[in-house]
Image (cartoon, rainbow, N blue to C red; front, side, top):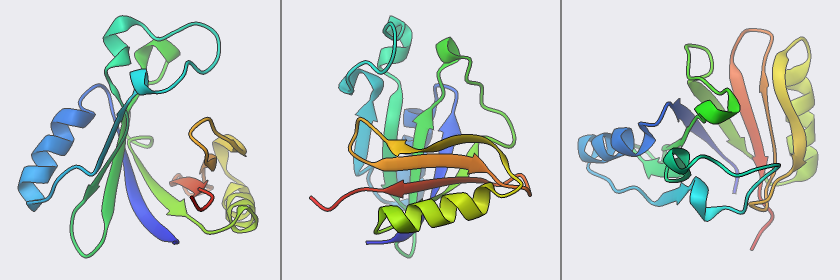
Length: 143
C-alpha cells in the first residue's frame, strides 16, 4: 500500500524522542529496530556504544500519518544538521514507480544514495532534490 511518511534523523536520541512523541500523541511505537538487530553491512562492525541505537522506528501520530526515525552514526561520519534531519518518505507499490520518482526527484539534485536492494528486503534510495528537500523512496515487496 502506497503512503507518505515523515522520516526524522537523530544523533542518538531517536528512542527518547519517540517515547516523548508517543506520550504527546497518545499512541505507541509500532516498530523499533536497533542496529544490533541487523547483520553487519560492509567492513567492520559498529562500536559498542552505537549498536543499541535505533536503526528504524515507526510511530503513528494523527490521521494515519506515521513518523519514522533513525539515529545517525558518528562512527560513519554521519551528523544530524538542518537539511538532513527531516525526509519525506515515499512508500510505493512497484520498483518501476520507485525508479520513476527517484529519477524525477534526482534531476538537478544531489547528495543521493541510488536505488538499490537493501538487506532488510526493500528496494530503497534517497536524494536531496534541487530545492534542498530530502526524499526517501522505498518499495517493499508484498509478504
